[in-house]
Image (cartoon, rainbow, N blue to C red; front, side, top):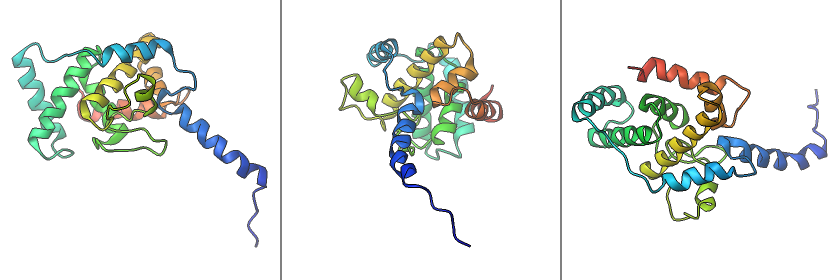
Length: 194
């Protein structure tokens, strides 16, 4: 039996479909939201961190134990956790939610690249570097990646008036689907929730 052949107009439209997919992934709408651009610009100049030393020690010990199977080197693991905590707090996010997003997005592979070109732990689209006039920044740099990712997630939470499921779907570029938010909530509940 012969396989059916796709008509040639499909093949002409395939590159366009791929381009639209790339442009819609991870909140990368074709028109850049000026408010999000401004937030990212401001965020790239801010600092943050733990306020209470006891809280830091308890949280770092707990989360380090949970992360030890994904990042074996203790020094690397603790540095990542410090940065996650600082960036999450700076953006007024739960550090555990950020860890769940990272687990789903890259499984803690700081050099991850998605099929649409998103990079690093929180899978940030490279167009943001050009958009902000920061072409020399490196999205595989943990601090840079977390700063972009937490700022974008905070923006979507504000946009969705605190509705986490919709904000997560926007972050993933899948608004209207519950698949991605469900994955993040499952990771949060099963591994990161305190």
